[in-house]
Each structure stands twice: as structure tokens, then as C-alpha cells.
Amino acid sequence: MPDHDTTTPAGINGVKTGSIETGANAIETGTNVTKTDTGFNETDTGFIKTVAGFNETDTGFAETVVGWQLQHGRSHLPWQGTRDPYRIWLSEIMLQQTQVATVIGYYQRFLDRFPTVQALAAASQQDVMPYWAGLGYYARARNLHLCAQALCKHWGGAFPATSTQIATLPGIGRSTAAAIAAFSYGERCPIMDGNVKRVFTRYFGIYGVTTERATEKALWEKAEIMLESAPPDLDMAAYTQGLMDLGAQCCTRSRPDCANCPLAADCHARINACQGELPTPRKKKTIPERECTMLVMRQQNHILLEQQPSPGIWGGLWSFPRFDDVQALQIACSHLGVRHDSAQKMAALVHVFSHFKLHIEPWYVQEDTPSLRSPQPGQAWVAIDELAQTALPAPVRKIADDLFGAYETDGKLFTAVPVDNG
Ligand code: SF4
Image (cartoon, rainbow, N blue to C red; front, side, top):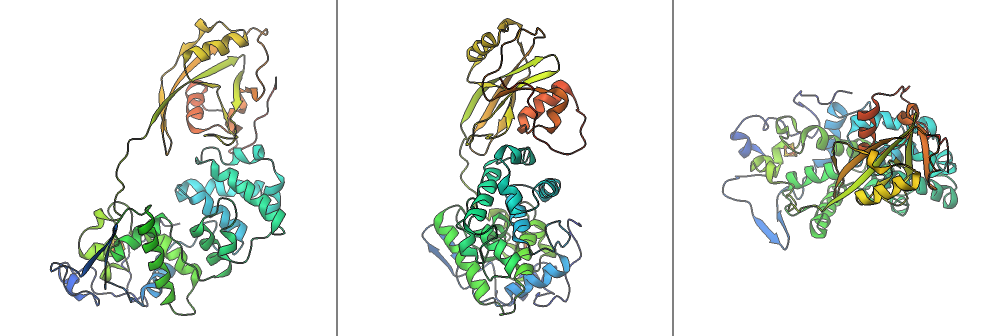
């Protein structure tokens, strides 16, 4: 998949060419724009400052996006070329907060193991988590599983026929539901994911933090207007994909490639050279910091792991036993029959979640006597050469990698096999 075609689009139906790369003159050749430096007719409507009268009736918008997508957008991703809502849904969920390049491998492995809604619904959550380990945001995997079960229970194992109905399912919001319906059924419904928000705020000059209700409302309204003014035979899959691709290929967060963007001629941000101000940045808030210790307990060729409760930060995954402080870790050592002063402090690490920072202090203990007490319920001794196939969260994987090096793996993921369940 070419990541980015740098060819300037030419002659695409609906693209206003000839005004993109001509420097200062370009500003004055856009059809809806007279001058930029004398100021637009701006209205301040509460939180959101929108640029009124600008592109309001741009009837060529959707056709421009479709024309560009068909010529320059992505067309060979593993989840394209299908109308199967199950596959489309899976890709949409995996792509939330995650790069395409990362998702590709996970997507294929997941589908190999769970090829249908029914197969996913019939699995246990414990079966599912290893196929998500490393992707982060694990609530997505739990909701995916719940959603498959809801589909089997209430919808006969098939996806409902409209985006409104799809949006009632667990873990599926309005934009994801719309993307599924647009790609699967060609339903005329707008999407508004992170990439599209960036394109819309810049193109239309929509100011205000995009997570705030008023800004979000303005964005959705604009997306609806663009669809209403689009021709009745609009290719919804190409339009939806085109908006996503524009955000990924041209209208990137930093250094957008306006020279190759089909929307450049009428884009508020380009004309005003304010791409860096849109979307309006969120006020930086300091995220809370937490601390924990981890007991990396080795007995011969096995490591003690503990399955994390669900819901919870790593719900369903396996971690080294985690404690609030060193005292609690020492007590756990005593319960296992290990002298806590034999524990060695390892290099600390920090893992950043979306809502807090976790400072981790791992302690390593090796105890080869066979007299160790059985682990607690939920804990298991896992063979070191099975760690590669065990669903470990990223920082636990890092500690294990640092300690035990690369394990043999055939690249597949399987559930951990506990050797002793206590
Ligand atoms: S012209 Fe630039 S800022 Fe405007 S939509 Fe295109 S890439 Fe984004």
C-alpha cells in the first residue's frame, strides 16, 4: 500500500485545480474566497468561532473527495474490498487510536482465529485477549466480544441494517456505526472520526476544542450538510474512505501536505496559513501519576503471572503480580515461602495510559526450591518459553523481554497454558 502518492491531482472531477501551487496568487483565485487579509465575515457563536459564509454551499465537496479517493486514496488495505460488516467493524475498532501499519498483522490473526461473529461470540474473553495483547485500549476487545454476543442474542448473528441500529451495540459509537453502514450497505450517513475532525476544522474554519459538545455539534452539522448537498448517486464507500484518507495522507496533524490536497483551493486553514491552530488544541492538563511494584518471581523455568481482573486497566491480560508498595510485595514473598531480602530491584519504568502515568518498580526473585507454596487463585506459573504466546500488556512484555530475551515464536498468539493453577 503506497503510504502517500505525492503526485498532484490533476483533472479530477470537481477538484478546483490551478489554484493550489501558485503562491500568494492562489489565495485570490479560489471561487468562494475574495481576500484573506481583509478578514472573513466571522461570527463568534459561543464557544465555537465558525467562519460564516465560507464554503457553506460548496456543492462540489463530496465529489471532490470521491474523485481524489478513487485516484489517490488507499485501496489495498486488508479490510477494503469487502462489504462484510463483521470485517469492517473489526477494522474500525482496531483502527481507533492505532496506526494502520500496527493493525494489519493483528487484523489477519484475529480473523484467522475468529472468522465470524458466531466464532467470536462462542469464544471466552480469555480466548480473545491474546489476540489483542499489545494493541492497547483493551476495553475495545472486551466490547468487541460483548458486541458479538449481543449480535448473536438479539440480531440472529447478523449486523442490523442501519447505522442507527448499529450504534446501539456495545462499543460502537455514532461515527463507527456510520462507517460500518456506509462501507457495508452504502448508507448515506456522515462519519466524524479524529482524521475527519481535523480535515473539517481546517477546511471550514471551525474553532473550539473538538471534544466539547458545541464544537462536535457544529462538526456533525457540517458533515450532514455536505452529504445533503451531494449528488444522489454519491459513492458512499469512496466518500467515507476519502475523508479518512485525506486525514491520513494530506491533512496530517503536523505539516499537512496542502500542495497535494484536493480541498486546498477553498480551505480556510490553508488560505489563512493557520493549519497549526486547527483543530483548536486542548488545554494541557497534567495527568495523575501512580506507582506500583511488580514481583517478577522465577521458579526454575517458570514465571509467576496473575490474570488481571476485568474491567480494569489490563483486564483479561496476564501481568507479574502488582502491589501498591514494597511492603505489600514483601508480604506476598512471605506467603509464597520466599525470603524477601533475596529480591533484587530492577530498573524502573514508566507506562503512560490515556488518563494516568504508572511508575513501575519491578523486583526480581529467583527461587528454585520445590517447596514454594501454591499461587493464589487467578495466578499461574507460566513457562518462560510460553511467554511469547501469552497475553502480556506492553510494560510487562518489556520487563520479560529485558530479562529473558527473545523467545521462540512462530508469530502466532495463543492463550497462556498455566502449569499450576493453585
Ligand atoms: S488544504 Fe491543507 S489544511 Fe486544508 S484540508 Fe487540505 S491538507 Fe488540510
